[in-house]
Length: 620
Image 1 (cartoon, helix red, strand yellow):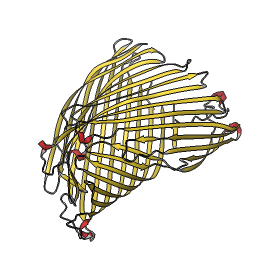
Image 2 (cartoon, rainbow, N blue to C red):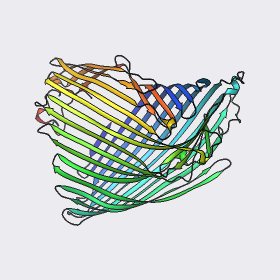
Image 3 (tube, rainbow, N blue to C red):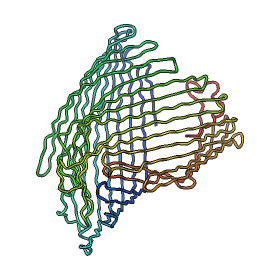
Image 4 (cartoon, rainbow, N blue to C red):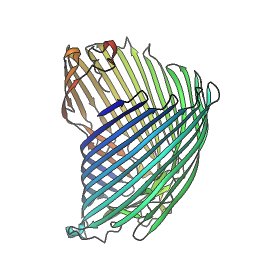
């Protein structure tokens, strides 16, 4: 719901309220392979998530004078999230049954949120001298209660008669996360000539976190379980991340060329304290980054140009990565590192656009590259004990080797014979480098970890055609191709390459003057997953238009008529996991649409606004 009121030409207020509620149920099965341990796991999970969100927002605009402008935007929001998850898993070691477990998790979190942002702009003369300032303050509190019950059955030949009461454990967790962040930006622009100017900027940002985390493990009779190391704890930790950034740049622009060059200094401070019942730690890390500023754009014509830009930013570690205490959940123990430095990301982007609207030609390409210094990586120690399951210990460090990622995308479009035929060809290549450390011995020290460098290349190619022989018929055949390849420095991390080919056919036809029938058919062929699934998806609709000017439309849609929709995903790391999960599959939707035509300032569509709807284009 949106409301607007103009008190005058200079003072205006408008606001909105929105409410959203989602109830999502996800069924999934996962096949995991633990690298270097000859251990695999099969898991089936049923997860239900109910999320509700309220958001109020108001905008206040005040044109104080022809040169002064103020805008304020206060916001209030409230989130309520409920999750229930039941997961059953069976672990095999050397192809023999090791243990099984049933994990039931219930959690509830609430998060009120307050935010206010604003800006002030002062145009000091008509030549381009300008002063600008904006700010943002955001505050939120998240409270989460987690009730987790773990029932594990151990297949130990020497201990088959273990009572269930000694296997069952229930973990109760109480978490409260408070955070607020704020920032302000100030810039001053001074014109030098008719085509050039200099800009001086200063940015200040701070994020502050205050958290508590309590956990206890009990048996079926609600008695504390003291024999599970790390399962009972109480922590309090607060920290803040602060950055200053001061810079200056020179900008030039004429009819053909637009560029800016400059530099900025960005000092950062990560500071905080952490407490447990028996220990405490002080977090205090400072960094100074030098950031070049560069952007260039050249216009070949009104429809063709090329641009290049560079940006840099620092990213603070997460709470889990800096908390210097052991936190154990379900045999996985995580220990943070309070001496972590923030990551710093250098990003370069190049765009090229060319086209000719009259000839029906267009081409677009983009290339992005990212270099990450001080990347936070995991030190993962994983080992199995017969009859007890998989134990995992995770630590963190800053990687000394630079990490880089490269991605590209391009699209070519061509229209022929007065747009009767349309061809769209698009694709891209993505390269990601990841570094991790692994040990499989329970007594391994930091010197015993092995470093793995994984190089992931993803090739994507799409070809779509559109054929419109008349106003009554439209046909859109196409095909999508994806190839996913991983190369690892440690041979045990090698994985089969994944190939996906998905042909599709989309079309619509006017059965009568005001009756439209449409269908969307696609078939996926997957190869390389642990369990390949090749869904055949059919979506269809029929629509009837009526009323004056065809302003009313009644549509009946059917989605995934064969009920085969499924999602496949692979994650690569110390654990290789193939996940298959359901998606919103077969359902039917009946909708009615009415288009209003009366507006206070006249019809926005101009003199042709009473014409019938344009024929809908099916989604690719």
